[in-house]
Length: 400
Image (tube, rainbow, N blue to C red; front, side, top):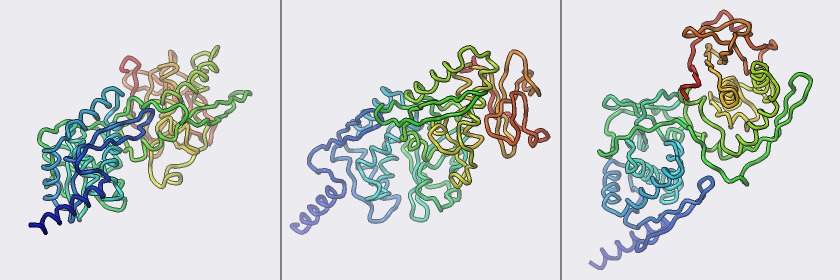
């Protein structure tokens, strides 16, 4: 009996050492989350030991322990923060990741860290699943959007995207069999990758970047405020559909440092000349480099990332041009996808140059990416004229 008590004491000591938490009282964790400090009380009843061996039994036993513990205060705090700060699902997941990291650091035990992410997301209502393959814990979430570039599986007629694919960079997760998916029955909500609102950041965390380009015979200079945290937000962001991608907004400080200045520069210009100005700003104010050379893979940058990045390609510039025209003129636009290029076309009162007709409406090409020719509005690059294209996004102002 004394031997059992000694072993039990050792296990409790090891658990408190591994988690960093006392086993007899609640622990307060606190971390910076964008412009705010997130505080959370963690009861010792929700602390589980790391697995001696990864197995379904470990996950189920850990779930039973935490589910019987005082976990609800954690979920209430997380979901209240989400509601108060209007977090989209992707940003809420970043909050959950940081919370799981504080409870169970990733470097100490990856499997337990992933378990907590799964538990917290499930108790927040999301249909998340865990499975084990080749002694790896794979984390999925139900999503019914058009997402590319990340592994997924279909299970019982529903599509599940892999949320931790970046941790297994060299593994083919598309081959993970879609069975033995561990879930929480009451968790049924789909997860959305749409980002329609950027978080508020601390103004002091912004950096100033000078952007310059020439229009006509005049040089224009901008001092744009940018936050490097934006790059972290989208570090593992997948390829979303073009509507979702084009409508990722700028953060408040970046918007305030760029859009009013652009509007001031456009004062007195007629609409078409103003759009031409924005087209050439997007085309010439940034250095071009293909994603394969820049990142080693295809990666779409949000408008704010394009402003921050040294290099960008046609996807990035199309999204930035769309955002600027929408914010300043709010004109109808279409995105035209070619086999190796994407460009934009804008609807004016009267078309300019070669007309593009789509669904009975006429648009004028506005090329936001550098080409061999110095293209004006209504001119399409000669290497695209005989190629088929697909309209992948049609924007109508009244559909905002």
